[in-house]
Length: 379
Image 1 (tube, rainbow, N blue to C red):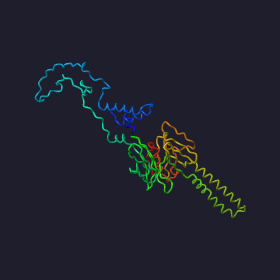
Image 2: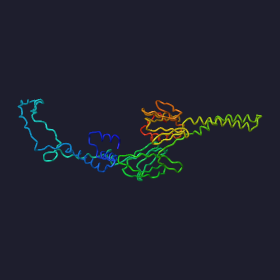
Image 3: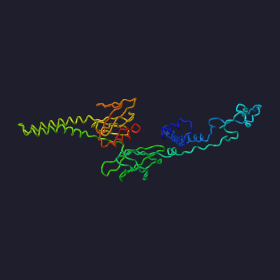
Image 4: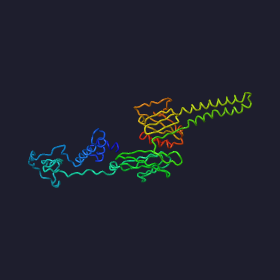
């Protein structure tokens, strides 16, 4: 049941649907220690049926015929004759007002029968019926190919890559399975409650024969080691070439010359490794938090601390930016994150492998949920 449905049921003066009243009563009764849930639900449903039938005898006593007295109305006043142009109708200010207007009464008549016809409970149709009788399955596709969704072995629809689809299912225990490229995941038995929803994300497994698998966490790893090797090679290559030219023309022993060149190359390689370690090269996303950092030095930010999450920029320069809640300040370890329009830059797409950009986009949409904000500059 949606939050709006619960709010309307508890606050609006209109009679709610029977299914909504039943579900809310069941959930509240389960929180009371020692309460008989079935008895409480049955009691509430009796009250609901009385309200639907217009029976208010529990709120006010019916009129008693013994104590009921009738006062005779005053004699009618003489009115002037109507003019012909009024076609026998009296002017509004001269109409007979001696007889008091009668209001419809909802109390019981002296014979015990209601003065109005009985009202039937409102029928549950359309969207309300699906909320009461069914549930929703939400499938997130983090993989590179379209997913086929099966419930109890029957195909119920597909989910495009990077998207998530909603599928209505009957309440109860159901077997859920997805497939892609002729390979299916293992079937999972999931319990669906009436009016509730279940979210499951799938990604492609590792290996050529692997199929889609359910995931609760997605990891993106950049190239810190590749950065170190690349920067060290770039720094040491000129020195190595210089050594190859100088060594043959030098008078010093060859072993000492090679040892000096190797030491210089290793020194610059270490500097390159340190420079590569300063930029985040790892990002883990889960339903609880996002983790980022270099190597084993990871920092975490809970989704509950954030008001907004976005990917800003274009191509490999795209940045992952988070905005904390107004009443919360992020406490992070050094080095500090760069500021961006009131937010913090967690990392660049290039730092965590730009090749997985579509997968990063899909994972952020799935795990950040309502905190995710689409940026039109994304490519």
